[in-house]
Structures are given as C-alpha cells and as structure tokens.
Image (cartoon, rainbow, N blue to C red; front, side, top):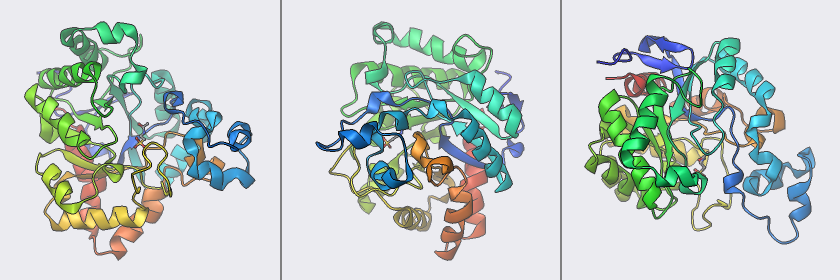
Length: 349
Ligand SMILES: CC(=O)NCCS(=O)(=O)O
C-alpha cells in the first residue's frame, strides 16, 4: 500500500484530509495558454496587441483568448500570491492546481506559493490536450506513459522532488485523438496502481464527457474517484446531464466568474451564467447528486485576476455561496460541495 493511502498529497507533502478545508478543485496559479490562441476578429488586431487597460476590459472579457499577453498567467506570480492571501482570509483552505505537461506546469513556484500563503496546493500529473503533446509523447506506449504519470505522483515531476496529488487535468479534444486515448488509458492504469484522484478536461462537445469516461472505464479506471470538469460548457439538456451523471463521476462546475455572450472556443455554445450554474447545482441536488458536486473558477488567464478587474479566486466564497444559500441550497449542502466532496475525492484509497 503506498504511503499516500488515507492522505492528501500537497506540494509540501502529505496531509490529513481534514486539514483541507474549503477547496477549489480546478484552478491554475501559473500556466501559459498560447496553445489555445484564437485570432482576433478583423479590425480587432490593435486591441489584441494593446497592453491590458481599463478601457479595453469589456473587449478582453468577451475575447480573452485573442489577446496574447492575457494567455500568460505565468507572469503574475506576485498578483496570484496576493490573491491567495485574500482567498485564505475569505475562508479558503486548499486549491487543486490543474496545470499539466503542455501548459507550463511550474512546481517550484507552486511550492513557493504554498509556503508563502499557507494555502494547501495539490498539483496535477499527466498531459494536457493533443495539440500540446510533443512528438516524443505521441510515440510513447501506454506502459511508458503510465510509468511517467506514476513517477510524477510517487517521486516528483519535471526533474523536481515535488509530487503531484492528482492526475489531471488530463486534456482531451473532440473527437478524442489517438494520443489522448493512450494518455487516458495510462491515467486509468496509474490510478489503479495508486488509488489516486483523477480529473478530466473534456472536448467541447456534449458527447465528450461520456466518451472520456467510457475509455477510462474500459481501461479499469475508478470512475467514482474521477472528476469531469467544465460541465458548464459541455452538457445543458437536463435529461442528457442526468444520463451523464449516472456514469458515476464527480460533476464539476468550474467556470464560475465566466460570463460571456460568445464562447470563443465553440460559438454554438451558450455558456452558462453564474446564476444558471447555481440553478444547475440546485437541480442536481434535487436529483440526488449532492455527494458528487464540485465547484471552482478555473482561472487560467490574466483578466480574471482582481489585478485586471476580474473576479479573483475568492469569488465563489464571497459571492456564489450567498447566492446558493438564497436559492434554497442549504449550508450543509454548500459544505458538502466545498469541503466534504473535495476531501473524499482527494484522499488516496
Ligand atoms: C485551462 C483550461 O483548459 N481551461 C478550460 C477552458 S474551457 O473553455 O472550459 O475549455
């Protein structure tokens, strides 16, 4: 049985699960997102190249992926540190940092932030979406990928002794590519060895979450210990959502704070607003899924930091929790979503 059994693995070492407190299960503290750049609309090239300024804020909020500098969260370590201190003051305890290979994971920075702020930080093992896979990664067998992921959890990643405490976010596109399928199978095999939590980034299609879970399941993964991210932009129809929920993964609404008219990555999608996210949580609770719900902001660009007029890492604690309570979700259910469910998920078997 690995030493992680019954514990949560943070970038500063193993801790008792009860120490986690309120936990955002899907955030990024330092990463780059140039792989997802969307060319600006004709006529907007000047805005896309201009420094971030108050007068451009609305454009930036609606076109976050067209502004190169906005995609470099890695440049904002000091601002993120300030945010984490505020997050603690607001009652936050822990953050799962989902940056994996391909979007510039920086474990030494995560360790430094954990030491300086007192926030428990859990780092992610594995690989982001196919466009970020190197030729070397693409050529690897499932066995080799499994060894690498297991090593990132048991011994440390990126040449450091800093150990990851979850596998993911494991990136998948739509349709899921061959290289991504190998990574999913390796994830399931590593999870079988380690008894660890897993988190998946689905492709941008309503069929994508189910397909990723099926691949994990067929490879022996533990779906009850797996989180499906980004449901806010993936499955809207209530019946289809319930069908997916029956598969047994955690259901994560992790784009709180994102309010956009046009979702740049898929214009067919009407991205949920925060009010609709809360309504969806209430619906899933009524349907019996309160033990399966997780929430977060998935901050991955500069404009969502308070330094740039964004909502920051404390938005859920300061604004969404009161809204949940005012819409009939009980304090006990809020605590489940923010404390108990993350604890159950993050504790190694
Ligand atoms: C970093 C990351 O993968 N964010 C997800 C953005 S998306 O719009 O939900 O795909």
